[in-house]
Image 1 (tube, rainbow, N blue to C red):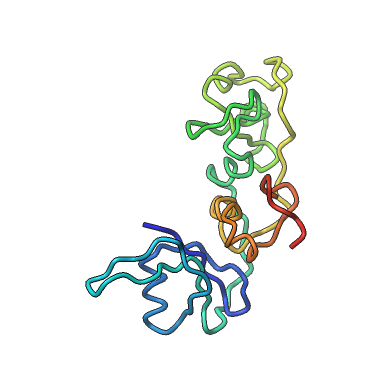
Image 2: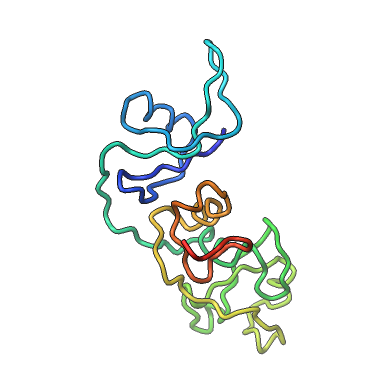
Length: 180
């Protein structure tokens, strides 16, 4: 099912939701459609334009989001790319740059995306001991998106959505302008 960008009443991104939830919000009068997708939704009475971006009619109060350290967030931060050899893919693991047994913490600054081949090669050593080099040092992202990091990185690549999403240094997609 297609995804829909859900905006707060002040146009701040709230979430990336599924089509069913977006349609329910529209039918209940809680949201309005700002942009439609190219494809139409088929109903018993014909077809209707499918929403791509919907905006809440009232402001939804939210607590300040916390950037959660998770496997999905680390992979998204590293653009699903092994930080040792540069291979892209879905079959990646998470590597502790400084191994846990050596006192390496389970933090943003010590975790990187890693392919299985490099993870086996590195083993329980530091990159220097394994004669491996990191593409870039790991660090905690300097922003907190209201939507999850993986959802943000997927959403910022959709042209019609990108105008509603803030651009954060280090996460500007190729081909997108940082001027908005």
